[in-house]
Length: 436
Image (cartoon, rainbow, N blue to C red):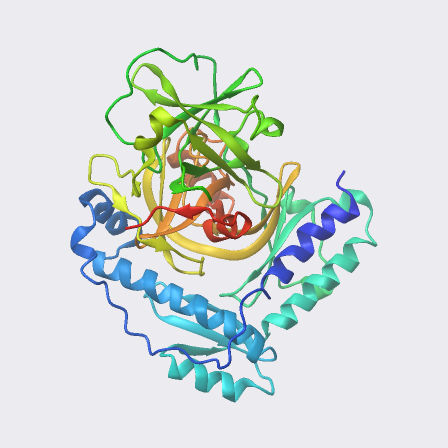
């Protein structure tokens, strides 16, 4: 049974985190003039195929929508502070239209003017973000009055920006009866860890390092405490001293308590038919709140991490040009060893949800299927680093086709949950993602 403190962390987390962001002098932004800066012509063929197949977008549209998402993210940080009575969130619709939700309030007209000056479309909604946050607080108070059999069903909560309501995560969707003030809220299944693949054959071999570079989404093996796992590499970067690192998932470290010590888990490249040479050790691992690990490259493997590429099977890699914040509706693509390269959209942001016995905070979710072994892989929007794959509501299924059918029957769809890369960087001063 989870404690009241843990439950409050899961419930209050998403509401509080929505308030974060720098304050500037004026809630104005440059008019929306998305430009793809010639990047569309540089996208690999496999990426173009994925965004056409999964999103029905052209390369230009994919990059334009990604840029619009970041303009909305910048506007939202300002609007939360300057228009608290009216502001109700920002998102992109399926056509790529940038939308600002506004409720009735004393500052609505000023908010409308700022949004329209920035080139965004305004949508009238019933509840402001602050009003929805108050409902989250009321939910926490209600849970404290319930017996454990009811209270422990709630595993997380997020504000549904597009539908202007709340979404609750629960292990037993049918067993949760909500109070009257939450009758409009949706209840959906809790996620489970997009687990690493157990492995019993991670015995290093003595041979020269392969010439191929290691890219985001590539398979690797981790070995520590007598346990072996298979995961996907995340973004290549450098630490505060300039040494090459890779930023992957925390639950891919089988011996988390030893990270950064002489007993730290080891990381190995995976090659056809078995395990390749050791490539590094786990320098830092975080599992609760933010799910990430930092693998420090061995000296003789450092050159293999000195690139900013994301693996697109059968094509040239995606070159990372910067980092981004998640925005609902923004187009995203992921790379992982099990399900490969696929695309979808951001479905929720700034949410806190329980995953097994841990709490994943500041997280965002996407409409992509992820299975065992995809853990730690990269999520991008446009050519910007967005997040690290962490959990999935369909991770237990063998293939995505089965997951699609099962979730459809349940009235849901596959979701991949992730830790934002900017949260990882903020928590580790000096850590950088490699960009071009």
